[in-house]
Length: 320
Ligand code: FO1
Image (cartoon, rainbow, N blue to C red; front, top):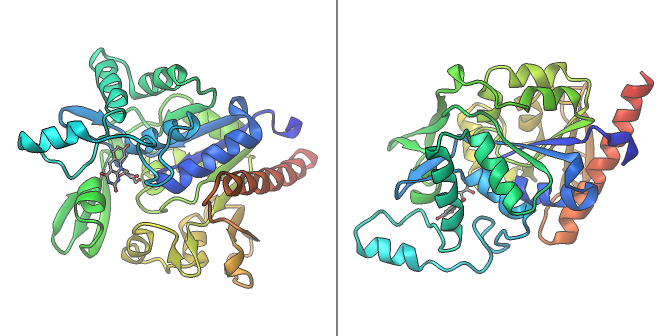
């Protein structure tokens, strides 16, 4: 990886992104990996501060992530949840018994006055993670989903209502006054390559891009920007990305992903099932490989493909 000394920087949210981050870490080593994570899904549950997308990346890199659920800890139990339910607390958002330790730690560190960036780094260090995990911002940004049944927080829409209500629009409260977390803009500027994970473009990557300065940094960086499509054969690999893209006026296709990132994207990596598809923007190079990550080998193979693309592009930038 000598050509990628300055490392790969991933923008991610959700569970598909966490899987790719794990693959990249196995392929590159943590020292060459930085991750900028969506915090628009964050919530307070039972008085605890929960950052689901930071949790998923942290658990993926610590090799603790539940393979079955895609979130939380593998093999966790839910006895505290059962007890909370008996006490009349809301129990639709499931915090596992072992998972609670992370949220207790985060809440305590934040209460002591540490920033989310510091808190995230401290927890990552305790797990022995060498990759750099950065929240998109230390400021509160809250994703709100306006549906035909009223406005919901992201977790109310996604987990409690299982993304059944029809979406009208999405907004990110606080985004316009938020600043990127320390290291975010510099990381984008100095990366050897920036990777947009196969995450929901509206509610996982959208909040990151809504923090003033981040989108411009992606436009201006010399690093190639490579996205992996979360849309395969005209539908989301998982979750409500299709419905949310439709609500944002985007087609649910590779074209829709290309449009969402048109102002900064260099390469779109799409699934082999879509071979033959095109995007109308001739500035975007479309490449095909198997992108569905079921096993650890799938994650590693996709990561290696992306690294090869990054090295190829990086060399072109270096040569001019
Ligand atoms: N996802 C669910 O579908 N149901 C849950 O009960 C749930 C609990 C949960 C607790 C901690 C955590 O870090 C993540 C959790 N998730 C749960 C996942 C989370 O809702 C999503 O992965 C993201 O917000 C989507 O980006």
